[in-house]
Image (cartoon, rainbow, N blue to C red; front, top):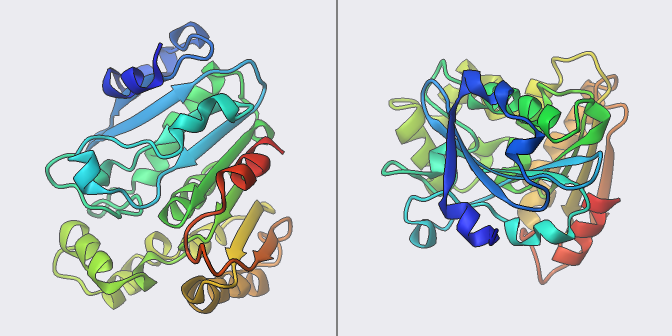
Length: 276
């Protein structure tokens, strides 16, 4: 099956029916689109089963709405033949449909918290893909995708995450894009209000710090990106300092690339990390 065709044609299943999917639902090396009907939204996924005991879950960063026109986008999905593991590409439901916004950070109107149900779906699919144990699973994302990867890791704490130039606190991003989320998901609230009322939905490291299991997080940050160096990295350092038990197995990896700035690592380097 052509992977582009797979992106356009989706298997739609209810949340309660995801557990009924088997390995046979996902032919080897054939990307399969799955739309999971959650209580408040549709979760678009692209699933690839490979002959591997490992599973990589990849989250989107910012979506180009002119290109997507409200349809699901699965960033890096053209790389699937080069990723030496089964894969689940996660599209944030808030970036799809007539109310789509470019950056949504897995947010929805309270009390809904899509990260929990998204991870529930991932864990059900992991069994079908031959990766039922947490040590078989790696969550990946850059920028806003890093936030999504870590939000899901909070419900799969013995798995691993690799994040690149991650936004740990989305309310610290550019004001006009933060305003979109506030207007659509938290109407009537300022960023400071959301940080105070729902701290675990704004600062994903604070969400993770509530646990008692040492997390395996590899954080790659470009020190040539002023935003990542001066805004987000101090949040990471604070996490290491205040949550030594939870952060015990986490590692900071720094590099310096003036040309790429906040943009993610190269395809070659990212694939090296995902296949390592």
